[in-house]
Length: 313
Image 1 (cartoon, helix red, strand yellow):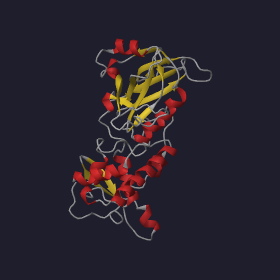
Image 2 (tube, rainbow, N blue to C red):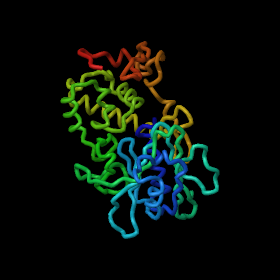
Image 3 (cartoon, rainbow, N blue to C red):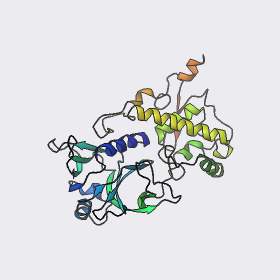
Image 4 (spheres, helix red, strand yellow):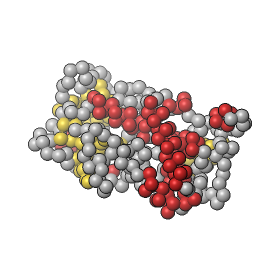
């Protein structure tokens, strides 16, 4: 599933190629991809046509496009996009043949030298699009990462906490909540109501960088340790963004159809049985181990990420 850096790569592409353009027409080729729009695909297409894409905003893994209307009022609704397991947003020339799993096509107003369509492609159909009302943020800050300072976000995303790349993210507030939570550190990092956008891959990479075990009890964390793991999350995500995201197959691509390369730089995730690069650099011999975690896997170095006392999985 695409994680925060992958969705941010897509957001930046949409911001570059789509923001400021009018949606002239909408083709819903598979109603399942707009199933969350209760009024149906015909209503979805009718309501979206004529709107101007005012911004491309992301919070965690949620991406939305606030919509301007001809009357010039502040945007009241947005096109909310969730990529799910295999969703892709692609900007394409109108004459290019449709992708095999093309589900929704937005025909955009002309701009010299720019593609004329925004396409939603989804092989597994876990993602989708929906028009959603914008609601005020609870802290008065912008809804997420975007170009505007509109203090609103889609109602369907209002339960999602801010992510570590959000300028309004409050690290000290997160530390206080972690101390009260009494759970394992990785479980907390994956809780989108506490901190959003961190998935299994980047959690393992950040914990490796911070030298912390995934099961470290959150109520034992000291404030500097919380700041250390958040700094590690930001560092890992910044590196992933610079590489265009993490791609293990052809399903994740950016808006130009290109895959990311961060998978080539992973230090822990998926590296069971391989040497820990940090320990090797410090003259120690240690192999990355794979452990069961919440019906999935966690990867760590048993030497520089030692098991803490009173472990809670």
